Length: 420
Ligand code: EPZ
Image 1 (cartoon, protein in one colour):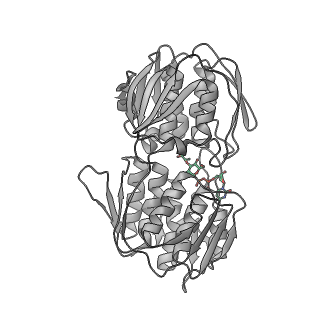
Image 2: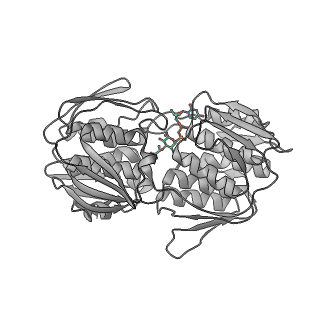
């Protein structure tokens, strides 16, 4: 199994190209199930999770073809011949559950494996199911699978989400595009990835208003058609490399990064002593002096993203003073803490909060983590640490970061992938 080896202590300097967003690409690929015409997606990142979603969609009978030789464009479309999403694929990637809404809406039924818990929390899908029930689907749980049927088609409904779940908003939005009549999704999530999905659905002929707000109104249509749509730049990848510049010092240009999508991350980095300015083709990130401790709390967008919590904590681990990092979205998303402490960080977890007391320097160590963002936070810690850090279980990184070692090495980091 591959490892990433890092010799830390070098400031980053140079340019990093930000890829298309994984968490926009996955629902957009599921949206390809809503039409038998071709949906062409551009700026597709080359990631393990995108390949898993392509396999899932293909096994529903729908073609997933490379639209260009560089693999950055995918063309999706065709008849649905199989409405089952099997356990073997869903257990690998929870986002597989995003096929549920499109399958029921278009084929009148779906059988999707229940995803079960994962490293960062229990992560139920009750809101996805309640919303579909409100639209008239009959839901049965049986043998570890959700069986949803709507033989006469879905009907428009108002669903007030008890919590703005990203995945439930996406699933229900896609389902509502083909329902009979008007649907309203209130207290909906409004992450930029949802806006990207809604805009694609509109390009496919859906009628949606309130895009970008927490209240989406959808007038169902009989059918959707093909379209071509660009995946937005990955705001989490952008924030991750901004944190890398913060922990190492130096100046990094993030080509394609968008300030508006970063939400509260910009304010927190600014308070910590990191300057981020927008240029014509991206963002310039500079840490001019030392870092200061800043308190952050994760929240739905535009609040501070849970997907940047681990990376920001590394910056706080080497900042001047203390900070409190509170995780409100997932109940078990501090798996990076014991590994960071092994590298010399001083972090104590009390319930949903971590108290981080900044130290002068981290020291390299062999480390590993059990999820994507925790893993990349260990890479950032390795960049800041004295000596060698070896990050194991690199397959977590490959789910969501394309060419992480090449991108960092191009900015002067001493980092390489090696077979263990
Ligand atoms: C999306 O997951 C992202 N995944 C996650 O990114 C991200 O961390 C998360 O949103 C929050 O921003 C994709 O977009 C593919 P949620 P999702 O539904 O949709 C609870 C990464 O590292 N909940 O907003 O699964 C749930 O348990 C990943 O790229 C219910 O209780 O997140 C969690 O505590 C990891 N019932 C909270 O809501 C439900 O029916 C937020 O979950 C649905 C969710």
